[in-house]
Image (cartoon, rainbow, N blue to C red; front, side):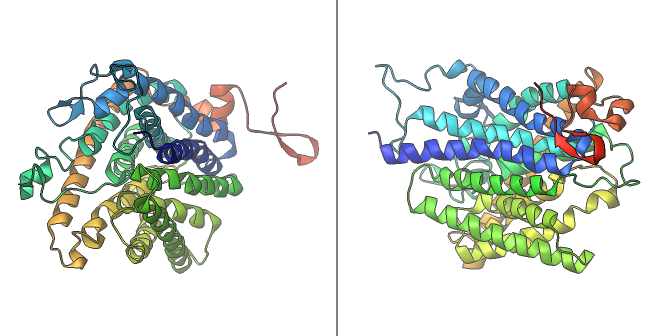
Length: 434
């Protein structure tokens, strides 16, 4: 039976999650240099366009269609959403929460969009726009859809009786005795995107002048605005993953807020101790680190557990973003340090902090083992797929823009536009095309 309240909540949640990708465009756009701002923002908008098209054609079916070997859904099972919206009588299909299935499809496509867009921050300032769009379509097909199926579609990383968790600790009543937990996308979204960002950063190579010249964010208010929009949209991301407006959604909302606030403080304290300053960029990055870490755990930990989880994530992510300088890889906008590290922190700490099954609640280490296993499998799967896809594009289309375009400004060279134009007297205005 249709539940109009739950349906309204899920439509709102889908809209909130869709807003996250333009928010990411502001967040990333402010972090790059002024000559690359439009290109950076266009990478997010391009991801929206490509992912929506392929999701309707085969993405939903690959994520939630009939299972193939526990790895992926059958892409032709519901190709073009055939059989996914209406029943045989032509009525809207309704899920167990009283929400039309078409609303669930809209909700899920927004997750695929933001996951893919996140990767772009690792390769900012230096790649061909066409290569990025082609990568987007192939990567979301070969990495995101399979991992979404494995975790949320009843595959190997789910709590099904044929999943890895069931293989490790057995089954009870036809399901894994110790089921893995990924409430809203720690493995599917953040570990997946973080690993892809690391692989591409290594494969594409560093920006010209990386480590030798300053590459500071050109517009910190953009970064703060982007962080605010991400935080706002994330309530749809996490609370919406309860799939109805109930107590579980309320707990996810509260935990999301609590963990994010704790992560901001932890990041700023870490910055102050290490660098002597607590920065706006650090506050904005702390927002995202806290949001990332609480994503898989939002429905399974207490508010006190969220405080601990957010604090750990904020501190560790603040430390992790500096590793690129020590290890020599150019993760331009800290996708690895925030999303991979934050995703791993959130996914693994569930094993300690989950109120049902967590080690600190006296339930032993079995859930912790399961969480580590699914995290490692996600890392391996995403890494291999991204490497293969990245190498294919490198050998065909090529990844890098010309050195002249990179140094002179990728916005003007690739898009024929500039985000800012200096006029007489040094006044800077946003370019308006008549």
